Length: 270
Length: 287
Image (cartoon, rainbow over all chains, first blue to last red; front, side):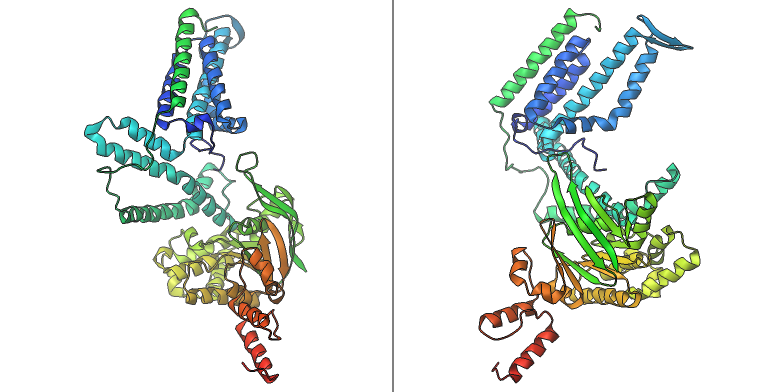
């Protein structure tokens, strides 16, 4: 469980860390759209380069960046394999019974691998450099124009904040209980799938009970501090756009322009 | 005979991340059979990390752990053996209860050991007796018991495995004085009757002074002292340097010494202290 790094925050003081969370959210969103707009390797290359620039600026170790890709390795591999065998135009490289591998197939597979990897890394860059509270605050502020449903925007943002806030706590709790049951000789690692699922009962029952207790205590603590939703609520930290955000927006704008130009310029994948 | 030994045990958390922390730094320990060891140390000194090495929940970054003379990481079998030889009871163990009845919950450990039903039953009843869990409580859902009762059921769950070494991480935290005394008494009784080695992580110096035969002091990931309670508490200044306290009665005697009375400074229990004062009076000092 401790290997999960998606959605984890790595504190720092780089330019990426200091950006306004609203701008980061919007730009990440635009970046992801741009990844799907890419039609050829040249455009995708620009996207990868710009991502590398962002990673270097954020000063987050490469090892951790790659860790975020690990959990979806299987999905990436699966997509690649599907693409290799399903696409049958282009020159034939290899043929065996009904399986046919063509150049276009291989190119598309590589294209997909790069695309998905960039997608995952880009979205993890957002969570690596922005604390969960700032992300939800940013989402709340971005959605605030929806005045007619303002209260529910706040409620949803609060629910997300709480949910995100408790992921590490739950992971911690899960590990603690797992250790306690392992100390009593529980075997969680071996056996068939059914046996292993059954072996989780001694962990999940206490985990659920603790979660309910925690939820109850949290609600109590919030009420004690007079929490009553969005109405008349002001913020301690007011978000401000700075020059940094303008530069970042310009950067993505140029990258986007480049991608569209390259898309038009080169018609084929490679 | 040495029952538990560590050889240059080092452990690091989060190797390769910006959060890398050395939690244990070349720990060398040698614990004799039959001792009641109290582990003391400031919060974050590495106590919990250390005890999780003894039954192989954590794998040392470097160094070795020997239980009963056997390197526990030598093979899968030796690791499994260590799990059953070393019973580890975590802090707030009542949060690990999950079965329908207290009886079934205590039986969880012995069952995992692959014992027969009759043997499991015998062990559960014995552990329940040690911990003062009544037959009425055994039939109840563990979630219907009081805090102190839950705690005792959870401890019984580890005792029922009849480990050679029983380790308890702050078994008395969050209990009232009566509950605390109960737990400590039952732990001592268990130790005296079974002759097993017991290790308790504690923050209460009074408890340590009253129950322990040896005190293990940990400071900043290192073992700084492993000695008897009087020897440990006679180094009061050193202890306060580690952010630790000495029992109140030791403080009184240190103050008396400071004011010029010829008293011993390794006094650590009330009875001992009273005898010292009596002696002093017989020697003609006015108190």
